[in-house]
Length: 559
Image 1 (tube, rainbow, N blue to C red):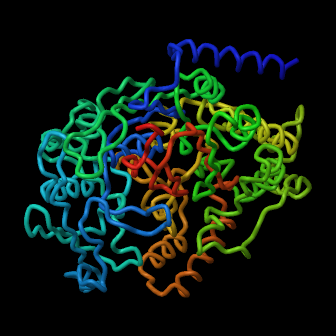
Image 2: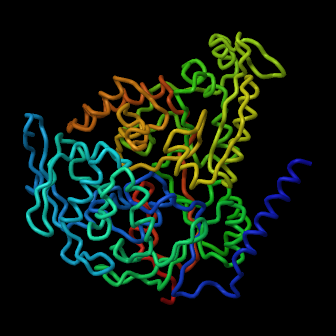
Image 3: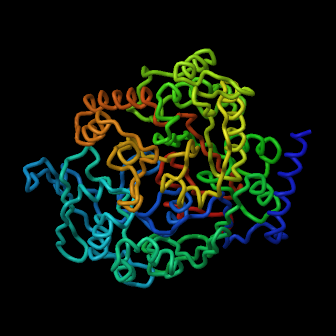
């Protein structure tokens, strides 16, 4: 009876979402593409907050200095030549304090213009650096800006970055996303208030904010974003006169909108999950092109380690032993999404297969909880000697059908060992805009990280990157994990140029991760792309540099 009621509810929601957008009599005009995704960005500022929806939208409108391509090779986009030690554009040097650093020289493309015609210049480079360096702006990648201690400007296009350490990824500045000084410098007069005053959110459709193939022409909060060609774009002319990105948080409604013709495709990065795509393919696969891309996408549960219950390692170990992750992978995802045993994906060369793993073991889970003092059961829920119940909140993105289903599985499996789990979901924009970023979640929060090949997780695991009010909630160590050896490893891995030695450091990092369990690993995701049959040029990457970075290659048959 409950399953029937849930099905009816989902169907009604789907109908409501479909009716919200008038149905098209025919497929989209070849000059227009409508894409469905499940989240709306919490901000459009490229360097504040970490949210995949923002990265997806901005990938149509901007081009980073460097990115990893579909073959996981580092290439230039905004720069003319990728600096290397071999070509002389990167030179190891000593810092004023005598540390081993490096100077890396980049030249901005001569034809790069902001959408209002102003050249992209070293003024923007220096301004972006100043914003990132200030402790009150709330920029996510704190360590990059701390390490970048000086910039020498040669001319309007050429500049040298001076870092206080020589890292193995010294020339990868993928996250150094430029901010237009001519538009946003005045808004930075009060750095603490800047994140609420930036033109990216107060004047989002200002054409001068963008220099990619497209610019944001319209943004309706929670609903949709309209992209139109940027006349100052230097590259291949994009095929579509308009791209509309519709936000449909409920994945059942996302399917319904695709079938009705209200959207033309579902983005792989932020759309259906594998189980939904497999079921969709069985019913409607002949009408669409469906691609599956395994990648560096890590679904996990962050634990708030300031919670007195979760501070106890035995409780954390019991929670992971109490989950049948193999069954989740097989029954929900047909084995296409393998169980994650740490944060490092087996696709990455630094993955260590011989570190500790946590099998499903109810006997061990119960013993660990008993040893941790949760010895009394009342109506099936464990209590300690003080009468406190073993109750934890679990949060994720509301409307994501698969995550909500996984939540229910977790809730039931943990109930079997006496843990009372309360589900308290929020819309993605709220969850990532405040709850996670400001560490307001009280217990557990389930979401995914996208990463780059051999991406050092400094910002998520180093104790210096715990968000708090004094740093305006910068950093991404949302669990509050503090471990001196981990801090040292993260710092050592970055500066170890020898791959054999670096692999040993990576192995130790994974050992600490699975021993201390600041996070419960769930599975590594594969992204399903549901595309029009005639769409060509869209190539999934499997990492955090997303497919729209090459949108100028997208084309529908007949264009």
